[in-house]
Amino acid sequence: MSTSRFKAVIFDLDGVITDTAHYHYLAWKRMAEQQGVYFDHAFNEQLKGIDRMGSLELILAAAGRLYTLEEKLALADSKNLHYQELITGMTAADLLPGAVAALDAVRAAGLKIGLASVSKNAFTVLDRLGIRDKFDYVVDAALIARGKPDPEIFLKAASELGVAPADCLGVEDAVAGVAAIKAAGMFALGVGLVSVLTQADLVIAGLDGFDLAVLQQVPVRLQTPAA
Ligand code: B16
Ligand code: MG
Image 1 (spheres, rainbow, N blue to C red):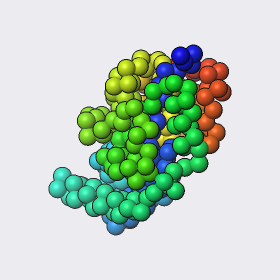
Image 2: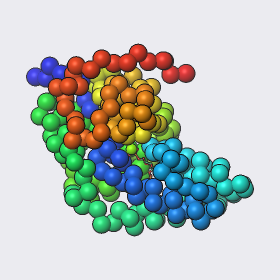
Image 3: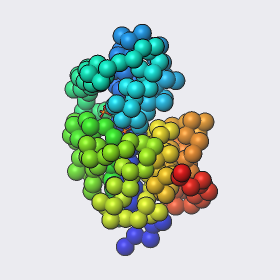
Image 4: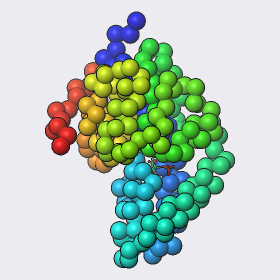
């Protein structure tokens, strides 16, 4: 029986388990530059964890002209096709350091494991990485109405895992994702830079620094209730 403070861990995918965040960056950069929009890593940071159409809107807002819905859908499709080309060759070698060890440690501790990615390519990526069976529940992004920072996707994962949000640990690399975890009333473990993930309860550089024993001890930050 588990005596853990947490009953479930809900992971983000892109940027946490594998570096597809870089492929999203490359695909958005090409599309943005074709539209005359300057695109760099700082711009990309705002897009992390934001769904496809939301990301597109942020880029086109900097384009200096209005786009029809048809144009937007075509641009989103072309970005996605490019992204899918970029991930074609992914294998287990693309797992970030510590990812499998973290999943196995959570399993060994008797906790449930969920995946909360807003990417509609998440199942493909999990299959390429060969880790789909390590999750008790993977949210289908197509069923989610509101993307991060809305808590919907994390609440859906918790509910399907049968665990109360307060007993969940969420793991995210994106500012919007950390905000979603906190709005869901969960403990937020940020993966990345402390200076960027300022809302997280704790930040580690990568999953190779994931340590459940340490996480049991970290106090939860006081939260401003979601509006
Ligand atoms: P797709 P996550 C998110 O995945 C990415 O961070 C974000 O950059 C991307 O736009 C979004 O998925 C949608 O992805 O275009 O493949 O549906 O971080 O929630 O795992
Ligand atoms: Mg991410």
